[in-house]
Image (cartoon, rainbow, N blue to C red; front, top):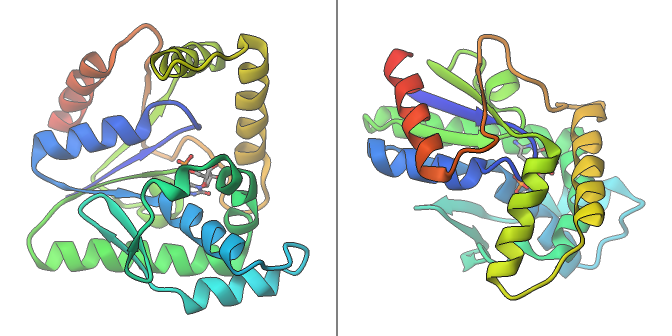
Length: 219
Ligand code: C5P
């Protein structure tokens, strides 16, 4: 069984996909971390970002493994390193590159195939999982929240880390990222055909998990 969870940045996909996978005893795949790893490798190798071939060559030359929710770059655990602002700022060079996307999509399908052969199921999250990578998945979810709700959540996470943030500035950056994901030429963020949309405004993570379990129970 494959469950896909797609949706915009900050909708809580990673947290919820992880919680759902743990509840169901499924494997979990964070496909955003794969694009992040390519961007990190590009930064480390000092590629010329104006020349897409350089990043493509990096993507082809690295070993990228996803193991138990950890992301490995040539064997090094980069799960935390790929979340840096610097990586986020360069991710579009990986995510908007058709050759790099093809590599990632093939690897995602190979992971699912390997799991299926071992009798295991998968919860996979990203932007294109239900639309392009696994269009025939048994259960496709589109997880979203309004930009204002996502801004409030981001602010509350920041407060917990004793950081301060400005509502309007965060809202602006969330809208910018949405625009980039929705309007890009290749694999834009869309609500996949036959997916079930869950708008999570006003819900906490446990409430969303319960709704997801109900949805999965009906798939
Ligand atoms: O989910 P996360 O924020 O880690 O994803 C980082 C970026 O990678 C997103 O902004 C998106 O542009 C890209 N991405 C993608 N396709 C996916 C997952 C992520 O293009 N399947």
